[in-house]
Length: 166
Image 1 (cartoon, rainbow, N blue to C red):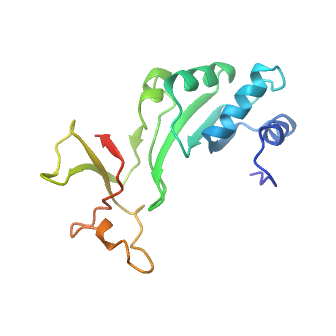
Image 2 (cartoon, helix red, strand yellow):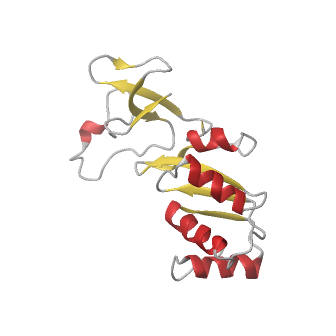
């Protein structure tokens, strides 16, 4: 593990090159910066084999372009919420890039994800609505409980506001 004083693509690229780093977990902005270095010829595709992307979703086109620059490396999207630590779902490297680019992967073991609609409650698979999560990754609550409405009696973390389809 390497802790860096600043998250700048040039510093990260030097660490990757100097230490032959094979796995990197970062946000999309860092990968975009690394992609710009690769396009300018300043970053060799090198040793990276697994790149975990969090913090924002990248477009399928960006993801495929970045993965091509990795020369055999895989980009995996990890999806999480601040109230769930560390992630809820992650892509599987054996899935084709087109599938990985269009989804947030598979739910991790021990976690349940549902879709909630205010007017009709928990939805069946395939419906669109608010993402709710249950499992050991969810927090117990907020310190001052001013956001207590985020939790329902069935212990689903709800009211996150992000829509999805399970």
